[in-house]
Length: 102
Image (cartoon, rainbow, N blue to C red):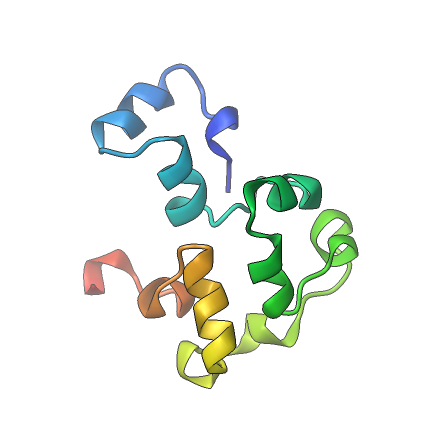
């Protein structure tokens, strides 16, 4: 996903019209996927991704993925679910349930 800063001048008014801002877009829409690890640290969310098994090398260099990427919400530990909430995932978004089914 694109972080808010990568949106075009045409896209930004539409995102704002949906009631989203930079923080809500980056967290709830793309879960910080457009960030580098140092930006995750700066945003205060790297610790959540660490609990989910990510590290800087995996994140920035796309070297492997943690086991949690293959788990459903119910298979995550309580700590992992709290970490996922910290980067704006809820059960349906973590499990990639279509918005039409929410």
